[in-house]
Image (cartoon, rainbow, N blue to C red; front, top):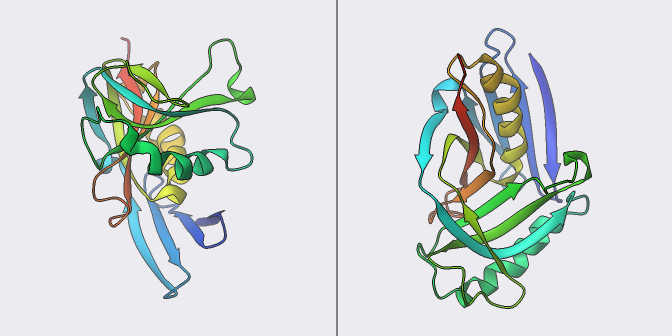
Length: 200
């Protein structure tokens, strides 16, 4: 069994244990410094759902770079109070984090990220915001335990699930973080990774 930790900020910490006898299962232990308890959740291949989403639009605030100084969380702090400026919000209470590569820029040099909400039109976007067209795609959807859970769940997808899948391979497109209306009272985020059927 291997264990490692991931810390974000000053109070959030996540411990990950990879079970050697079941390499497809992780145990995620969420550390709460206030009550000093740990919540454990097993992650395995059965939690991966394949979902096809229709094309839609997301409008919000854009960041480009490598997020080396927590620029994305800071942008969220700025965007959420301004989200009500998007009067065309199609699903109040739902937020999207959309990440994609920048054309002509190596992934090691950065990516672009949009913190936003779903809208029906790309017109009349408030100052300081942009809108993206999200194409219809098929995704592998995995739950993550709050923001600190994004990195280990991504590792599980890329290093465990995807290489072992006999039906699916990485698709071209974007990665989506889906924040449901229950968030943050219920700390579950759904990560959407683009996939496509394996070519025979």
